[in-house]
Image 1 (cartoon, rainbow, N blue to C red):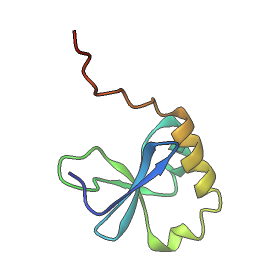
Image 2: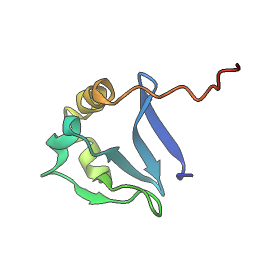
Image 3: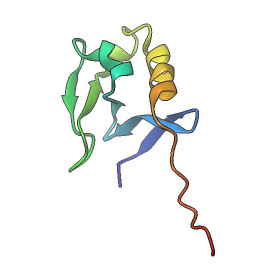
Length: 85
């Protein structure tokens, strides 16, 4: 499992905090961060995410909008309930 905290919007995980670092999922809705952030794995064997440095948290003015847009475009979670027959 991942590190410390998950950020959810509309029930979908859009970002993580692992080892006191902020990571945003890489998806078409978050491509605006491509030229501003480096990519890194939040934990071993994880897919790369955008790594947002502490100083960038206050300089990326539209970060909340990017996270909301990301949640709107991510697929809904599939139900893991099994149907009894």
